[in-house]
Length: 231
Length: 299
Image 1 (cartoon, chains in turn brown, cyan):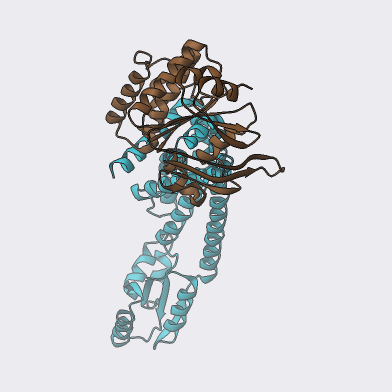
Image 2 (cartoon, rainbow over the protein chains, first blue to last red; image 1 turned 180 degrees about the horizontal axis):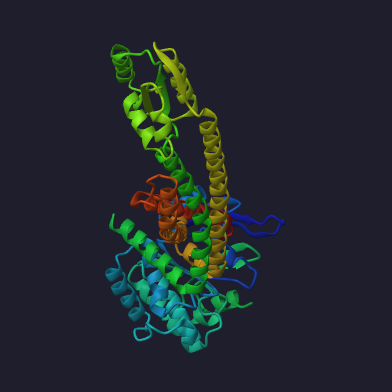
């Protein structure tokens, strides 16, 4: 489902954010990407979301080589990904429902069908009664759930989440991770970038660790995972 | 097809929403666009009316062919035949007796005419050429003077030339005004769209990140420019219509004083449609340039 081969990302000022990173994630797998702040997690997230391009190497998602992707094809790739950003990127002047309707409008769903799907997505993340609320009135956990609803409303095969539990209390973080788990259980591939060790102990997932732009895979034991994730 | 239609309908709704979101700003923009389109439109209409007026005024762009006094029925028939076969335009014969009667009817002329031993007036043809270009009028006058028994051909070519030059100058000024104000309209729309992009930067960024294409982002902006320009065009038509409504009776009265039956022509439905389409096209153009320039940073 996701294959990165010898990916290097070097910024124009010469800084190497990723060095010869290779990994493979199979369909329906849930993988955590850990590492201290500045290790390259967000850079890898940007490469996977086709926000940036690797300096060398290749990334293939769902059979599509991102390096060979034309500028015009990028939006169509992103529509197949459920993207969760570190700063959530919610529209605060739009209601909860309007935020979730946006990806459907982009794809061109007929309004009635879009409404039905948006309501179903909100119900799935536990926000069924907040449709007309503005995001600013939601708690941090609720805002993250709204971001998830927006990410999954187009039923993507892959969810990429960058620090989805950052700034959340442990209960809210657990709820968010349980939502991801629920999606994984129905066959969605989930990649979560996090530096939150609690999430790793709770779920015991497969863990990829980034350190100064270099990737290593950790054994699936809570202690090792926590050790690898801690800043 | 459904998705395509749904997206266009959504973009039109979005453009209308943006237009209504700040009614005062929208109204002021429409006012400026309307005035910018009103000036060249009114100028064009004035030129068009002057052109019509020049055709309606008696004696203007007509050629009079005076035959010699010895010309008889056979020569008259010959001239008639040549005018007919030459397809020069409309013409009519003013027989010498008819001309004398008209002269007698003129104030103070009856006694003078009565004292004359015989009718001194010749038969004449008054020709209104189909092509009223000064060069063509002169060519015809030259041709007519070469015909048998033609004593004199009268064409006030200097007047026609001056009038034509004035009309051409007027047309050029209107055209320059048109270009100038079209530029103004494009600039106004350009700036409006720039401000909209700045105000909706967050939404555009998010939309891009979750799969919006360039078309999806730009479409509402194009519709906005199109709509604003079209409404500006309609507003200009309204302003011109009001202006001509007040001017028309005064101009008709003035024309009557000069012996002309002239009514000022306002904008037809086709003119209004053209003006609206022009406004819409210029609005779209301003929006397109602005979107291409200002959306680059979201790419």
